[in-house]
Image (cartoon, rainbow, N blue to C red; front, side, top):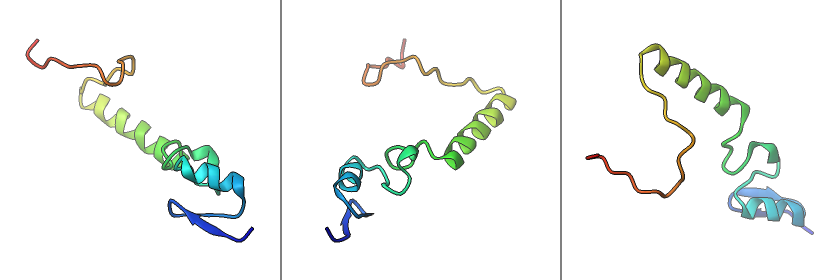
Length: 74
């Protein structure tokens, strides 16, 4: 099988193609879809959280369900 491009990622075999279809870089599969779990992104998120806490900002809770409704007037 020749090299092909799927979602912008170079793929050498069917496993790479399957990962690329899920928007996971076959060269760095542990980074997750679109690189969200990449080490440099994790470090940036942690630093941003630390900076917000130093400013007294209230951190967002990760316990909410995605897609639920939010009433800003409540």
